[in-house]
Length: 153
Image 1 (tube, rainbow, N blue to C red):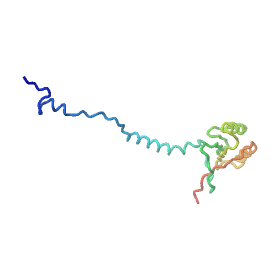
Image 2: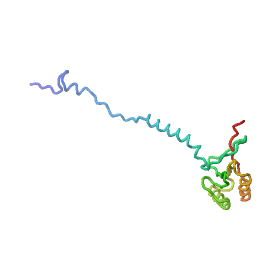
Image 3: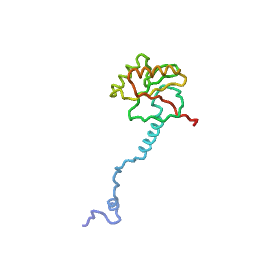
Image 4: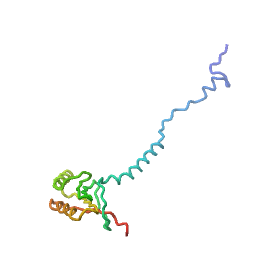
């Protein structure tokens, strides 16, 4: 009595036992992730310059050289066309200007911070000079006026 346990060479059992089951893929397809990251990078590169200062000001154009900036965000003081004063994006009264700037500079580590003053082209000269005089009287010595680069040559 002979029984074959594995089947013959051409039997059904032998074909099934010779076939190997493919192991599950353990790799992650990174191509879609890279595509998403590149799109996000492009979006942030385009949007980052627009986020610097939220007060719309039409700056005068000059041929001055750029001021070197540190890696920290600068203190920006803006005087718009109506003569309103802004520290960053928030409007501030002229009387509250020095206490607000002193609080900001003390929180950052002292009076050696550079303050960038942006004045609209349409604002009168005296309004910007009044703000600069107030800063000078309060002891702020590193004050820079912000302009746009003259495109006319």
